[in-house]
Image 1 (cartoon, rainbow, N blue to C red):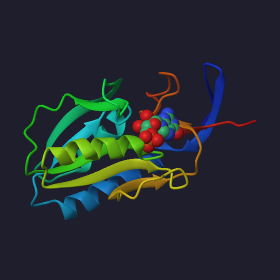
Image 2: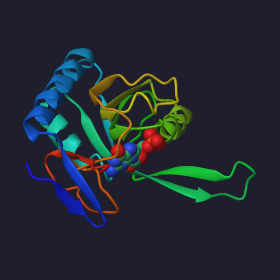
Image 3: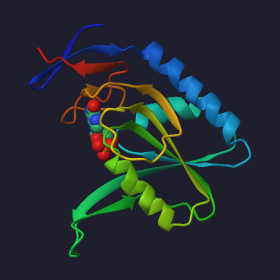
Length: 179
Ligand code: 5GP
């Protein structure tokens, strides 16, 4: 694998597509075993998760539904400051098992906001599947049920993840070259 330059930054090869797919398969097998009786609704958080979600859900063989959402933040008029909103959820989720599909969990702030929104909708249970997790950066206590790989606190691109809009289409994962 070659290093890649995206705008002003250079990235070096980090996780190959083969390793990614092997790990995604293991995640799917665990989900298949755990949730076979739940008819889960997979909630794919765009944009970054599109590639992971496609690979994961090809390996999920239990009955399920899939929905794609986006999170939008805006400054509300209330004193709470930034308000996070979920866009694109059309399914009724009350009483259901929801599996949040994330590309990466860093501090966990985004995930916690989403889980708060889902809890208000009285779901039966929330499971979280994130392909990448940065344990050193994670500040929350919420359990991530399915993790593909743990990585150090470094900036990565590829496999859906971007740098300033670029790099999402790369099938391997690259890490920022600090040199
Ligand atoms: P958190 O709220 O957990 O700190 O951050 C979550 C979001 O930050 C992810 O969904 C992703 O969009 C972005 N992010 C965090 N770490 C990385 C990274 O290493 N590379 C890229 N491309 N995005 C990241």
